[in-house]
Amino acid sequence: MPGSELYEKFMALHTRDGGLVMPNAWDGLSALMLADAGFEAIGTSSAALASTLGRLDGRHQVTREEHLEHARLLGRLTGLPVNGDFEDGYGDTPEDVAATVEAAVEFGLAGIGIEDTSGDPDHPIRDFDDAVNCVRSAVEAAKGRIVVTGRTDNFIQGRPDLDDTIRRLTAFAEVGSDVVYAPYPPDLDALDAIVTAVAPTPVNVLVSPADKVLTVAELQKAGVKRISLGPSLYMHATGALEHAIKALVAGDLGSATTGISFERISGVLARGKN
Image 1 (cartoon, rainbow, N blue to C red):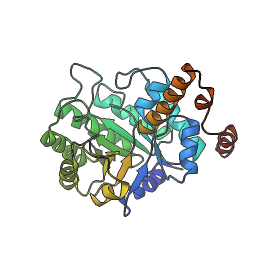
Image 2: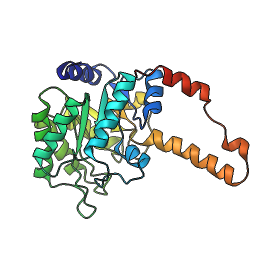
Image 3: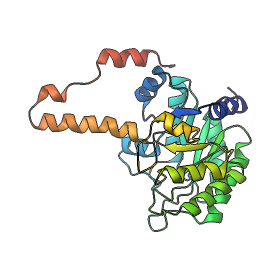
Image 4: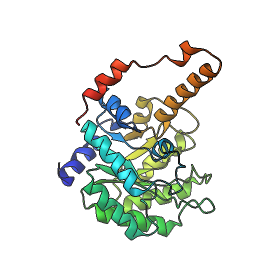
């Protein structure tokens, strides 16, 4: 599907009544299980991908090429629009970010997220102008072929500044971001303020505000147009693995070997678009 058609298809999910729930996969089986459950689009998770490779997220330890290949695999297997959680766009400069967006279009992604992170633990959030320039460069490179999400990680990085968060998201929307996003707003009032400030630009939310886990219906009522889960599903699966490991250490083979059947896995894999 040409980039412009894929853009229109994916963007339409954001602008319809209720928007969409976009869970994040981390391998072929998880992507196919989400498709099998009826989800209309999926995202990658930079944190989950990094973990599967034994690396840390947000430290430039996963390469752009590795993430692109991963995203293309998920899209090829499922036939679904895939949104790439591409950290800071794998770029120190706006030009680098533009190159990443061009590559994402070539790899068939439907969307791409560009964060204002830097990968530097001592200065984790880019300065305002630098962040806006990177998002502007992403939008200019996208040319209506891929949905661009402008994201600020203020709350994740211990900067609970709602005014600065809204300032950044508003600026991202003004330079053309199709969607904006601030993971883990501190409460529903903060989320309401964000949705109001950037309207009519669609807002993504990562699971729920930090103070309370809301339902999909409650988030939709608050005006959220896309709900993603980041690494949450991966963490849930890994939690089950840790429980099984503890049972195995204790000698409990029964508890350590429960779970989905191999027949179920084979059936899901057989439906993949290989």
